[in-house]
Length: 411
Image 1 (cartoon, helix red, strand yellow):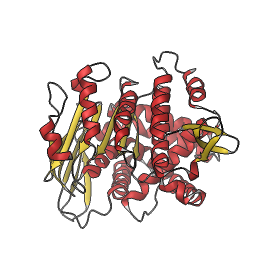
Image 2 (cartoon, rainbow, N blue to C red; image 1 turned 180 degrees about the vertical axis):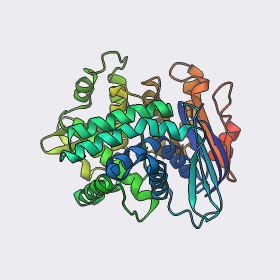
Image 3 (cartoon, rainbow, N blue to C red; image 1 turned 90 degrees about the vertical axis):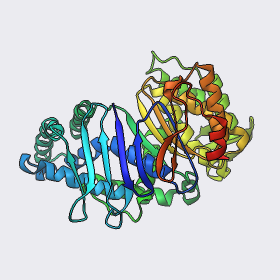
Image 4 (cartoon, rainbow, N blue to C red; image 1 turned 90 degrees about the horizontal axis):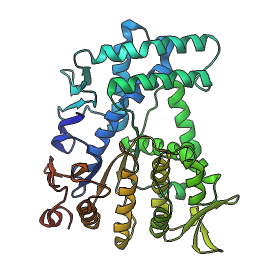
């Protein structure tokens, strides 16, 4: 079973984390909620770091230096995600993959970040990766690079093999806070992020000014590549639904109630045309362009679009969200919770992890779990960090959180 054991890392004194289908992390500001989510995200992202290193530096990778290259790539990625470890106290992070393998992170005697793959885990990674290294070198000798279809086919095949080794085929995304800022900054920052992404792809390395920068880069580029194009070619949510669902004939999803939830959350109807994205607050002609919409609407829209598409595409995904209720009126938290539950329940293997300060979200979840239709008690994980130690608030038997605990940690 997948498990992450964290000891003495930043604000976290000790945490033994086992993710379920629907995971909520509550608690006061700066208690370690985001750190806990970022560690879980990073562990799920390890395959990608290996793939990125193979893609960027295949000609320099040989069997005798494979582990050294991979360990260095993962160490660099760790610093990108969490900042320098040199000023931190000694810590350990043990990641037990869904397939039962184990990788351990720690501070070594030289005060450097180090890691090791336990037993034959490293050998399995090597055995399933090196053919891709040789294939990419052959493609490079033919004058092809990472922009070619053949190159991408090799990486896709490598990903499938590593997914088996790790026992994890979910597509993960971290959705950071302050999502509305990209509308305020506009296209200039998108150009900068495009350049950053290209540098990462071609060199496999990029220096970041803060640990938050990479999370925003990945989120913005995901939205640009996988989300916005689908909505741009469809005028309404219903158009998107029928466009995507024609490829998901086995899915048992409907659009009416979900589109009503989204309209209620956005306080308007989202539509696109040749002039851009709009929020209609009075159909058929009263609207604002999305870049001029309220912070509430801008904070929500990209998160909603991503979860909506992920549900329709019917492939297992894992989403980490910082405060989905940010900038959202308290009276809409119930609707927001219902939408998040709809996403999680839309695929058997979907998982959702998010932080919140909203007692209304926990109360609504209690009600939904009590109904026993979309989520069961074993699907629920409501957690908090109490003086640095991870504590489970939800009952193992019912999945609910007692009101006295809600009052203690959320009110």
